Image (cartoon, rainbow, N blue to C red; front, side, top):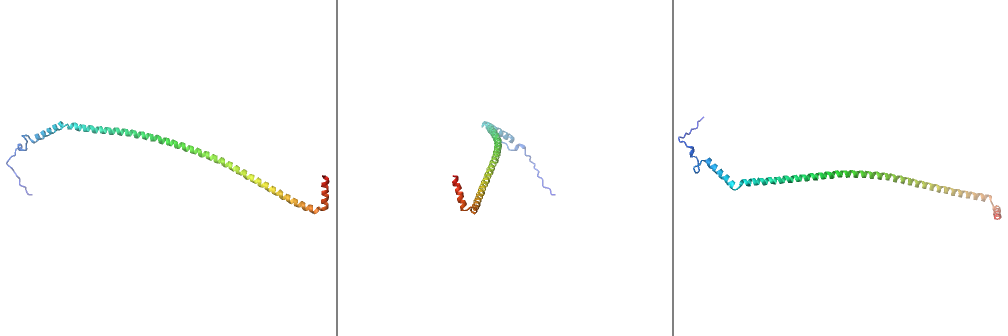
Length: 177
């Protein structure tokens, strides 16, 4: 390893030869500058401005908090109002459903009664048609029987009755009058 040369000075520099202003040491200059700065700030009312700004900020935050409380109370009132509306709507829906069920039951009962009446009416109409058909058939059978009896009587009379029998029958009828 190589050794670096060492430098030795024979002149001692006293500490008092450092920078100075008007015979004051650097720390004294800094202290005086800070004192002057603080005095200027006090003279210009900087602390009052700072506290005023902080007070204004605090007041604005309080207003925002109060407004937030009011909004929260309004929101809770709205929530309660809508909860009540929902509860009422559910009650109304239940009542409407119950009424609809009652109406449906009433319609069903009426439809059953109407269908019974209609079935009875149609049954009566069918029975009336059957009775009319029976009467027509009986009338037709009687007419056919009468017609057949008339033809049969006519043939019998024509076979067994001649002109002499007719004249004798006519004389009896006239004598009876």
